[in-house]
Image 1 (cartoon, one colour):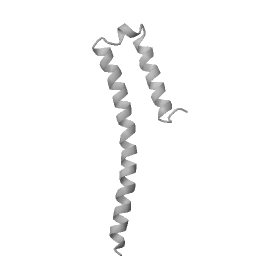
Image 2 (spheres, helix red, strand yellow):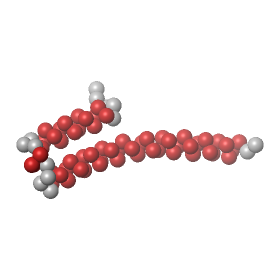
Image 3 (cartoon, one colour):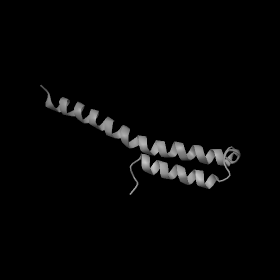
Image 4 (cartoon, helix red, strand yellow):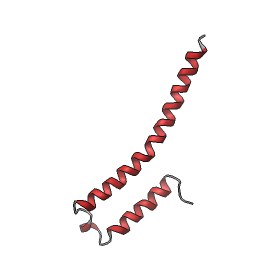
Length: 71
């Protein structure tokens, strides 16, 4: 049995799981905030709310809770 191959496969599997989790959070934040900013920039948010700043703030708080960063 080649332990270096077994160790290498285990390391790759663990690394893939960790990397996937690490990449997911920034992509979620970017996607949600980019989407909201795009709606505001192109004038699609104003017809839906009279306080776009509040919507953005609520989104930040929701992301904070979702990512377990509230303290």
